[in-house]
Length: 433
Image (cartoon, rainbow, N blue to C red; front, side, top):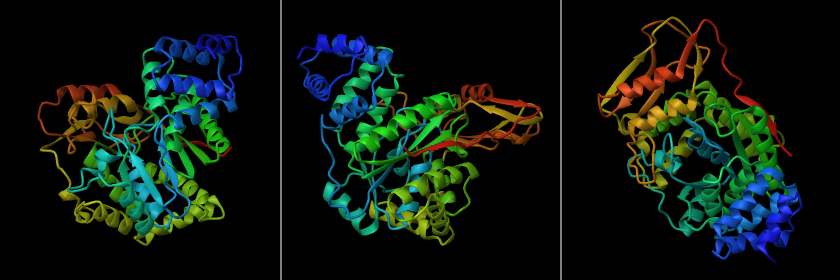
């Protein structure tokens, strides 16, 4: 088998066989196939696409390029959730304890964020004492006993995907549905879950800017999951403005606590219920999505979800009293208001620009080496469709410096006030097959 022949085959619209895809991924992972040949193949895939079988084979070849996590020691149907990213995306902090409160195992492997704010682990580390450095045995034991645990990702999960992603990033082949879908799904499948719920974002703060592109990606990932034996569903959700109101690590933990009390922002609650009902249904704990949603609402009303969050924090060394006293979370030295400059209605909030403003404060990482300030961030006091008067606060900046003029300027650049606007639809669609 020669790599040049396989490049030519795909370039001309041919279908790569399972053994050919395995040969490419194994050879590339071992360093036997050079970057320039894989770059050429990626460009051929970009233009010629892959069929469903090729996409599933590519996914599984990347899964088996490194460690595959064995969660068989954990009883029950393990359901994982993945978001394609966004700004102020607090859903995991709410969903994990909420779903676990219904006796469904949530064995979550998470990473640290590179971008607007930290990843799930960074956010959880806002809680004093909380840690994710636990052994595989401890992880399984916690999930079996308490139905919830979060651990940092292993270093050797899907090494082929890491190499291929870095290559796509510098060869203008990132935006390819088969390559995106297989990249995401390989990591989820290698992490060992039985079922996967996907939150595919669309809008200015998302990777997929249009609802049509997001739907195509969602369908591709759901088909890959189902084709390789993982029950998979997806929600297509709006990220034309940040989700919820908090953007920043400790601020998002506080917002998650509010949501688990039933007092969180409406859009965050709506999305958590949309994702959560799929998780409950796939886990076999409800006969319909409607029944699943009612069980989730009851877990919030009864306080069971909040108690599960406290238990989860305590199990991993954190101080559970932050749930009742959020003042114990890291606090920024300064709160600075950003007032509206005119009367009207908020018509646009450019999500990725607002995320950049939060990153400038220190809420996220510009590079892997950047230090995160867990206390800083932004609170949106107005969302799209909200009326505002001149002088009213649009955003509260939480900062550890008074010099925030550049951040203010960025916020003004990203928020447009007009005579009329309506709140965007949050859930654009559901993909089940």
